[in-house]
Image (cartoon, rainbow, N blue to C red; front, side, top):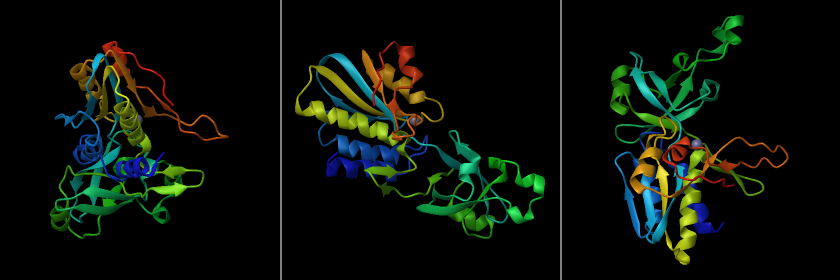
Length: 263
Ligand SMILES: [Zn+2]
């Protein structure tokens, strides 16, 4: 991977994009696509498209640009925030995490708290935390103070930086599935240099973590004969620990488009 592409990948990974709130991350993807694609556009659902115009067949390359996150669901009298999950969380992963919320005038940092272990009875300590037992502390002391910073309905993500690890690896909260959106746009960059006969679109689809909704929209609006969706799955090789990217979006199969295995 060259330096330009790696910098693009890291911009994608660093920008929050919880499901339903994909506009900011979509703009990062679109700006890169505009440097080489014939057409770049977004739809109202938050998906982004980049197209190389050609003839038949119509080929769609897709990865989902949204990620799991949290949404503020209530503010209590002391300024603590209750929250709901966006997408599927293991609540144990959330305990003690810092979160970055989209506040009224900018990002607001909070910490996810729970009842201190010192105050738990022995049987309580054995129980897994539930999301309703957790809260976000943004460092204020009242509902009014909290309300000046964030609205109920504000979204957020885990506030975790990207780190380079040995062996050319990186760690990031949003690999699922920014790596897919990166892969499909880089794949589009290759035929741009050697124009294909096909019409090829790369799509960064929205809302995969909650509904799959915009994979359907992409399939019906672009009407591909061939579609390849790229997403992550569990590592299966303990010796190499390679993340595998596979197609796993049932939406394509429902449209009759063909999906292929990618790695
Ligand atoms: Zn995914």
